[in-house]
Length: 325
Image (cartoon, rainbow, N blue to C red; front, side, top):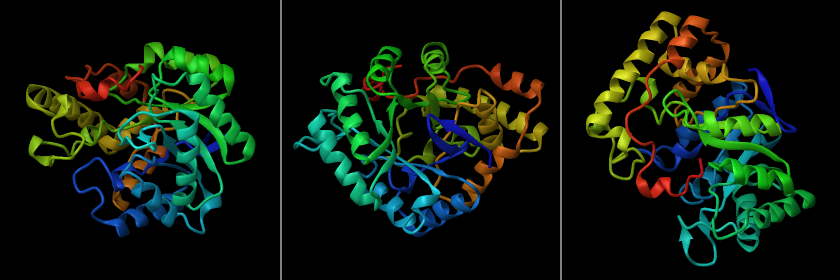
């Protein structure tokens, strides 16, 4: 597996997003043993970058990752996130990036992960009620204390990124980025490259759509992120099936799977990009990591880059209010 640098962090250029093992998708949390096997198999395949968050569950995903990595901590860069659980009483789903809340959050994450330090600690969503300078200052203190190695932002816009970076170097920005979600290319990605900040794309497979295995709205149970999502319903869904079929055709030409082609396209966008495709199955992590060895032709890359945009918004209106793109 090839590696890249996110700031001073050396990571495999394909990581593993652990969220779906516990949270967000149909059947999440139903097979812990398979999830742990998947994490172990990822390490065997050279994956060194594991991503989780306190909100996933909440809490249970960090606990799962902690159990899976027991005795293997020195093999991985662990990334987790704070700010979507208000520990003062409002609870999960409420933004709070105040210094006091961060102090509570980090202690909980360290305990659940079974470690004395977090390699990459992200603000999960920008908290409009707390100045970003206060948030970053609190994380900078944790870095000075050795509890955190590096700071990151998730779904932050250019102004927030610049203000944060002026206080404490931002190692990485995490954002949804894939063949069918490319909005960060015009506003966010140029700022990251100007400042030397890495990009960690989540949902590089379009929440499963780009794998070609999603064919019906009936696939999603209530509680699944995609149930009721604009891109996965009605006419938008039918239009997006045609997009998935185009990726499938290019994959057939490349002798690869659609998932591998979608990841390989992302990797071709720069050596400062480290996607974290999520899965809870061994077979899928084997498929995804094999994209590291796939080289697409210039014609195939042009075909992929020229695909029409996905139909529908990537989030519901309520979810979109937490984004700063």
